[in-house]
Image (cartoon, rainbow, N blue to C red; front, side, top):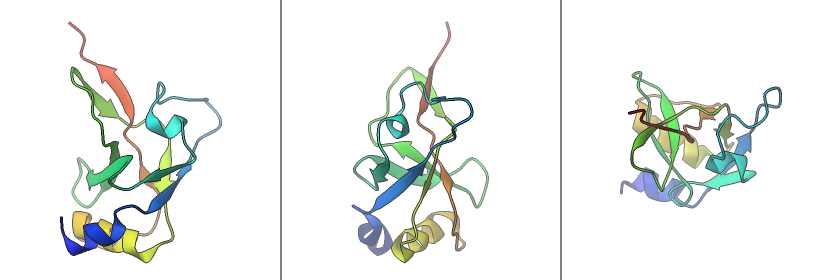
Length: 107
């Protein structure tokens, strides 16, 4: 674990939920809580596109994949911004998509 990850571990990030369509996470972790804790509830990773950051549940299920469920995370704490900079390669201040909607593979 890097120093920036250590400094961000345990910090709360507020969950921002979209209100138009209801819960699109299919009971994902962000539908159950108002805030999520880095490295306890969620982990931050580089997204599929260079320079992006996404959040995933710590406890990942097998037999499918995670995708965006409509909710975002945000924090005004500079330690979170510094950790995201380490992940993405640039400073970032804004909301991070939460990929907590689980879609099982179809046979």
